[in-house]
Length: 219
Image (cartoon, rainbow, N blue to C red; front, side, top):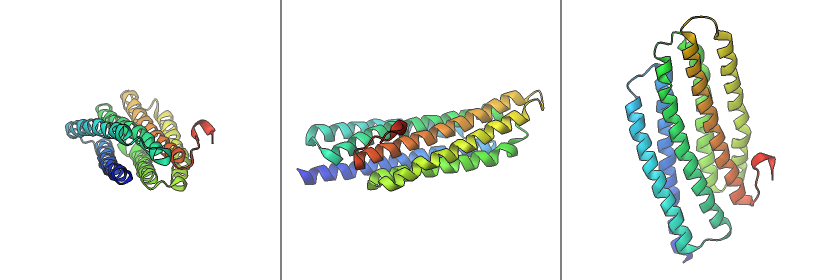
């Protein structure tokens, strides 16, 4: 029974890796749309998001099947629970990536794109790195790496606040700016939320490994 359970867990890990890779791709593509004024990329991103939604359902069904057939306990049970929550977080990140791409409609005629692009790129790179590290921490049951992800969330928050300050400094510089500034705020907020979801995965990893709840300052 233990051998069969391990095979099921290994298969689940592979599906989560695949799902996470797709989420990273869609996030990278959405940022490219924003920073390079690519008005043609949204359709491809929506199609990829549909694939993410399909995989999210498959992973959930796989987790429920393992619970029903093998009735795992201790750390294996906590891994399944963490995987279910991560699965949901990854699907939400995919949705946020679509929202980032949709914000391009506010920025299509933005003449000061370069002012914001550098901060947005750095912010998104950090969020993507957090996402990748949180997945690795969960798969490898590495609570140390998970703790690093939690600490890095503050850096993404700092980038978000910088974008807000930049928006404030740009206000009043032109009649068309308000719509564009709203677009940049939306993009920054979605990336900040993605980093929060990566942090959630890291917190669930710590619970899986140590049985400690660290969310909301607990643990």
